[in-house]
Image 1 (cartoon, rainbow, N blue to C red):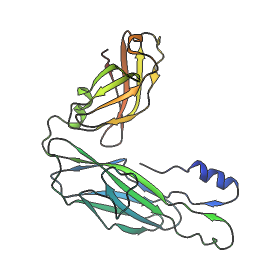
Image 2 (cartoon, rainbow, N blue to C red):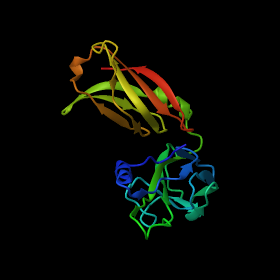
Image 3 (cartoon, rainbow, N blue to C red):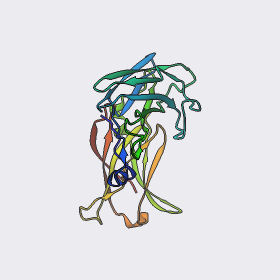
Image 4 (cartoon, rainbow, N blue to C red):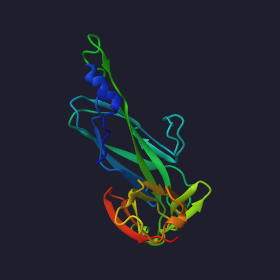
Length: 246
């Protein structure tokens, strides 16, 4: 499940005696996989709060500043705006309305879910600050009959330590037609004596590469191994490891 956390600003304002609205809408998943052979898919939303919530949804092609009127993506959502009462749920219907997408690899889009809280009943009598919470989920359009399976994509990754103008980096190349998302990447070296270097997370697209900057030059590494945690179609974490070329 995905849920928005309170921001630091919200916590500070709460300590100052100003009321703050909290995110109440819970989304039934951390990503949406859209099979190309399917005309539409559904996603469940639930209102776990005590007040009604107005929700607006749209899909974009990677522009974080997109709005429902400026977004570009071959998808339509019905309905685009709706209300969810406390304790109730709602199923989004996402429809694919375009055909000009690659058929040899996944394409990444983003599903935006904007939660607009109702006006506070005591807004006239005291200071009240309310937030509109925007959730942003990956939407993966997956062509039919891709070679291998998503679970096999991790096994095809190639890891190496590369030297660049700005220093060395741990590079991962993804030859598969699937996106691979990392929750964590840890580099083990012979120098580290068992203490891994934590490099964070990220995502590598099909046929692309991703670099994790290192604090030392490539010649400083003798042997290396990488441990990583990936996120599968269901939002579950899967651990893996691989040797690193240098």
